[in-house]
Length: 293
Image (cartoon, rainbow, N blue to C red; front, side, top):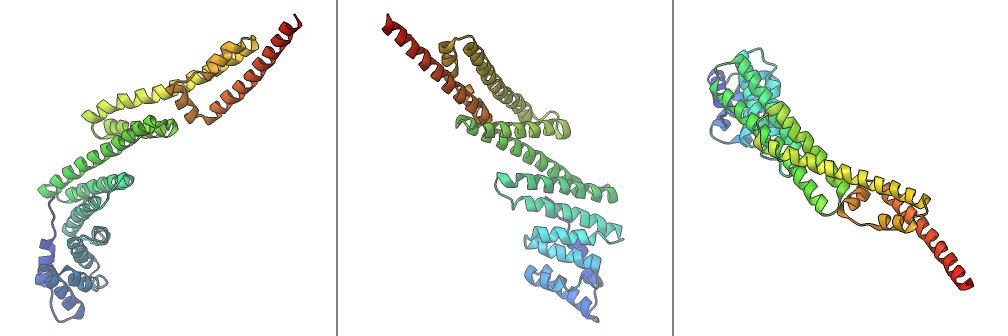
């Protein structure tokens, strides 16, 4: 990643004078910056933003950036964009894009992927704004491409995380949670293929598998509902043993259905209980008849 920080700082250092306190403070901060003492640079430069709001914020942002305080750097580069100097605006857009990208390196864990995606996308916008002001800036073009690739990578990483988590949940019979993650994975892969890269191979490969899993879970629920309906019809036709066999049938798919729709499992249990009561009554009656003979 290419950073464009020092040129502006050097210009200010050359034009600053020592007669006035704010200028002296600016020069002190720039000197600290140039010697690598970024802590002192921040302390000095933050005192200059009221007198020099545009350049003060830009220089302060640069010092924060050097201290890996990328969120603060982004904030102050944003303030520098208030400048009417188009060259300064272009540099501020460019460096704010760098600061946003750098923030993604400080994020860890799947729960932060979405935040990293938003930062990468916003960084792309900043580089694009910079290029509108300086169309021939090669570094801005390169960093735009870098941000675009990072965003694509993060978008897929999020989709893959949802898919892998869904697979794990399914193995543990947590079908409802698996279904929710498959749905999120599908949204991610479709987003990549429709909005970012229609030829993305990994998304093209995983999207059909994700849809197959969702179709299987939907079919599992439909089959369980159909079996319950069929059982009730058998009971109405006095086919109690056939209904019992259908109700107690076990399969992974039926377990998936029960996890996705707990009320369906309750209906099964209630129907089984009533059917068993009927079977018990019928058996008692048959015993009485046999005893009477």
